[in-house]
View 1 (cartoon, rainbow, N blue to C red):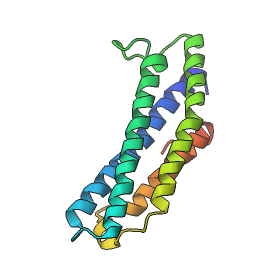
View 2: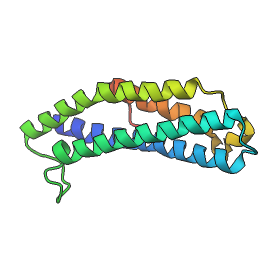
View 3: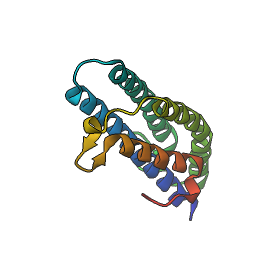
Length: 155
């Protein structure tokens, strides 16, 4: 794979996978609020973790957006990917520097989710599956890409 193809792929895959996790967090938060009865401690614990996750994911998205505007795009006006080999390599290098920081932050969010008591499956049921499980799968998919972007298949 050429460096330009790799740059295109890491940007698109990361944005897609991070966006999927964000959507599941948002949906789960909405489901928890709309379907939960009362305000028990377990509901509050889940909502607190989802709120934390939402904030962290937004921060990661903001950092990724900043990387795109600074390194990925030729200019913020054109929003065309850089074409020069030196610019491509610089963008890939900075993505590589960003990866371990994002990996650690995602690990902390995922750990908080895993350590939170699982909500009642009746609350998290969704037409396409259980949203709690789908969120965990999306996190796994994102983590696999963050750890080894060169060895993951487009999902």
